[in-house]
Length: 159
Image 1 (cartoon, rainbow, N blue to C red):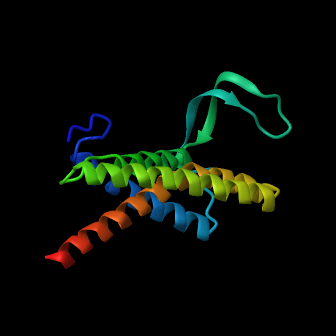
Image 2: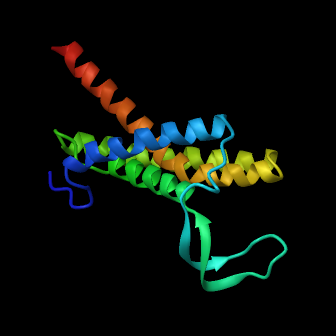
């Protein structure tokens, strides 16, 4: 089956290679309450920048610790490559599972965000919004691989 919207097969491994270390690093930094603000402090171009008690700035160069941005990009790119790269045996059934998993991930993500909007407030809600950047891709990857595993297991059991 021709799937023009999927990344080539080698991107699948590259996605896991980016995703797993980035997720582990994010969990460790978060659990140990390690600040990344001072790590890799460099000058960067900012389209928009606002700091507390300062006037917002646009199209300027600022100093910023970019380690958290790098970690975020690694997680997003890794999850994207992992979720949307061709598998070894890409067929109509795999495409169907991929489509259903993506739809399921959207529904679950919206439900989680509605519940978070109703029940979570303050600064913690902002943290939930940040986590929301990943949850849909993570829900999709988990559901897709779980369904593929169940399909492969049922096919092995039939043999």
